[in-house]
Structures are given as structure tokens and as C-alpha cells.
Length: 369
Image (cartoon, rainbow, N blue to C red; front, side, top):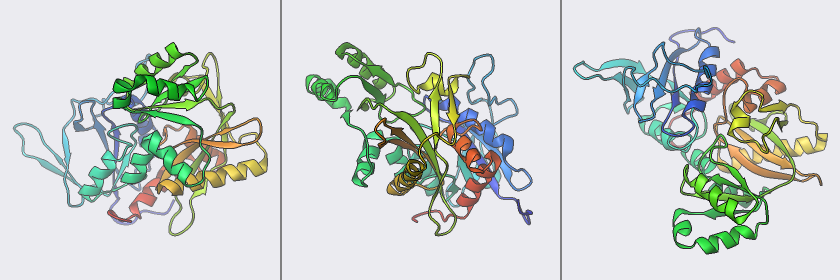
């Protein structure tokens, strides 16, 4: 690391949010706050409570699972507002004079799901004129909506699986037609919310009765639902990192996700309960296939116009084909999450990855790029 001269850039690490991935976000933020170099950066931890309030995180904020209980943002902290014109942070409490906490140089939004990873917080930061880690508004929105994501990837010549989109009105007014379309995919199918992450609301259906229950379950998270034809294959993932200047994005070594225990597929429990999964990186695949996969991951990153980082997920079929499943513009970000592990296997430590992302954001101009 280079020696820091002059004032340290102020980095606001933002976490929590108004969605079902609230706790997952906090776990990632805890990891970032643990490794971020305080000699180089002034760090401000900010939590977004489930009701949407922004608060200055106190020393009592939990960032880990304790006794089986996932953490939540402590809404009792000092409330904050992010003002436009370069992003000054201001506190406000009833009966008190607002206090200016100073300009924010960069925001690190360790956030997932709707009202966070989907372009909403990115739009807020763009309007405030604040630099931030990760993709911009459009790439974040497209990456969050799996239906539009697959359309963009397919239009870019990348192979995606067969799927059916079920919109809210279709399900309420044309249920029979929708179910017939899904049947044409064959059994089994995987049913998921179109705009959720961390495998929330996903289930497998092998009969019509299971399908209807799976759709209703997914609709608890999102009125827009995606149904995908099952693909037989190994789950191989690759992380992509923006490069400085005009260099092309860089892809990590591919890694294979191995699901353990009773988990039939890579669901929420497999991802976040200890012992549910492991990652083999590099993946045990032919070298030519690995290079093809890395090139496809970079193509997906550029097709959406991503910035910062992303994780691209593939299926590797028994007959040697690669099928792109999805791209995640703000992947799980604990030190043990897949994307950081892939970069560690490629030679970039978690602390170095955090620093690289902050430096990329600091070097990026706010506004249209």
C-alpha cells in the first residue's frame, strides 16, 4: 500500500436496507469494516433500518450471526441525511441543531436486493453527486431484474437457459395460459422472484400443484416471477473486476460451487448456514473451457455496462456446454463469500479487493460516463 499524504478520503460503508436481504448485507459490511485500512481512509458506518431510516451505526451494532440470530440495523442510532451538492452527511434529531459530519468522498454500498442493489441507491448517490463502489443505475437495475438481464445477455450473443416470465397481472387474469407456457419448459422447473437475491423465495417444482405453490411463494418476495427450465450441469462461478484506466475488465479463476448435506440446490440455507456449501477454486474443468468461461464472464460484465465488480454464474453441462445463469452486480461480500474467495484464489486478498474497489470508485467521475 502506498503511504497516505494529506486528508484521508472519507468512506461511508452503507448496509442494511428495506428488503429480505437486510441481514446478509450487514454480514458483508462487517467484513469490510474489519479489513478496511483506517490509516488510509476515514470510515463512517451507516445502517439503513428496515423502515428506511439512515442511522449512524453505534458501537452496539452487531455484524455477525449470534446464537442463530441474524443481525439487524440498530435503528436507535443518530439519524442521518445525505444532502446534494457533493454529499455532505448531516445528523438530525428532534430538538437538536443539525450537525455537519463533512463531505463523503465515496460510498461503499454493501447492499443487496430491491431498494439497494437495483439502481435505487445508485440513483440517490448520483443525484447527490457522490462517488460509489459498484455498478451504476442501469447496470444495477438490469442485473437485479433477472428477466431483463437474460434479454440483454441473449441479445449480446451469450447462451442462457429457457425461461418464462410471470407478471403480476398475467398471474391474476391469465393463470391458465401462464401455466401452459411453463409446462412447455418440461419438468422440473425452478421458480424464483425476478428481483430478489441470495436465493430468497426460490423453489423447485416437479408437478402442477408444486408449481402453483412455488409461484405463490416467490410472489411473497416479488409480484414478478421467473420460471426456469432445469439445466443439468455443474455450477461454475467467475468474478469480474473493473480495471483502472482503459484496460479491459479482469476475470478471476473459475470456481465450482459444491452443495452439501440435504440441500438439493444452492438455496439460501446452503449459502449462509455453516457447512451448506464449499467452493473449489480453481474449478476442475479443462483449461480451454476455463478460458472460454472467463471471456464470457467479461462479455456479460460489459454487456450490462457494469462497473466495480460482479459475479457471473454458469452451468457446465455434461456435454461440455457453458450456459450463463445470471450476473450479480453486488455479490455476497463477506470474506467467505464466493466472489472474494475467487479473487483470493486468483491472488488478490480480501483486504486488497476492498481497497481496489474504493480506489476504482475514487477515480470515477460522478454523473454520465
